[in-house]
Length: 453
Image 1: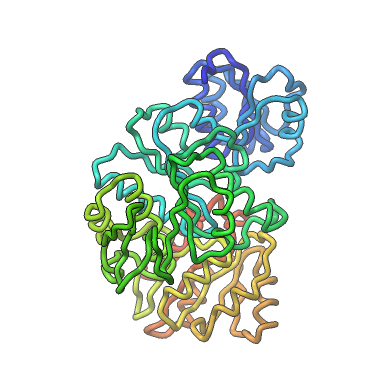
Image 2: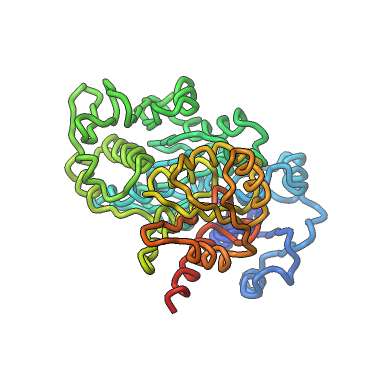
């Protein structure tokens, strides 16, 4: 796609919106940028950069006319019901997201990994598998690096291992990964998608443009995901930690194995050799192994990476042990199912810090998962009263309400005994108090470190 001298509107100045604008400016497009924040709320260096590149800025006010734009690029954090988005689409202007822009502008082979939980761990692990196998590899998407920044520099041999959310998939049209993966589907983002059916449809967009020459890696143990496999045009590769498969990745005699398209079995590694704990991480490892294998990477090379990989920041990340009390950062637990898996993976007794932005789900399944392992619940954020109400309805009453992270950490340490684990796994997004889960996790780690001073 040639964008030189084209009039392009970028809507939303999150990470991906800024990256899209930067790349488009570098390619000679006439770029206009919009954000609902006023100039006083936007970082001054960003305004200075856009003005120096002759971009037109609309901060806190929409452009009066939109008919003159050739293309609009919308950030994933901006809902498609946004008024400016609706004005653009009403004019018949092509509206795409940053991932679609990257696909149209750049080269490379795409692996697209989606699902409610486990995306980041699976994406980073997959990236390591490809790198260790000597493939030119970029790990991009929701994991932190904008896809478009790497795509425009990619060659035909580059592999772009992409973590992709339902919000990003909604704004794709031509995006065609050679390998796609769906890890699981559990209630999340219902405040935006309105129903599980709509959420699942958004996830299914990951394979929309695939063909029989491509691969779709899917969780056979997750019924919502497996139902979507019926309509997939690509070769469906199931993975399972609970059942034997005639084809795909599964656990046999406590080892990860893959049965290929000819029916031959390949051993990857033993389950106990994995460097990441928990049954959910076994599922992530199975998915990553299948992606690597069907991309043509040797089973032995995959196994070596599996053994050495130690996980990612903010996902069951060990922080410190103070006076016999362990502190674990699971700020990536941004929904109920992710936090349930964290509780399952951590040894009891647990003092659990939770709460944050409300995505509209009931917290009763979360409370039910405590299963005698959680001895106290420390709550903060917008959802704190809602979680407390659901917990008390379920008969769990050992609850502390806190104003902020500092108080959560202090109170957790005060009531902890040697041998306890203080687990930050909020079961909520961070947006009520933080810009993202990384900032929340870093603040937790800083508060824990302050205990030692």
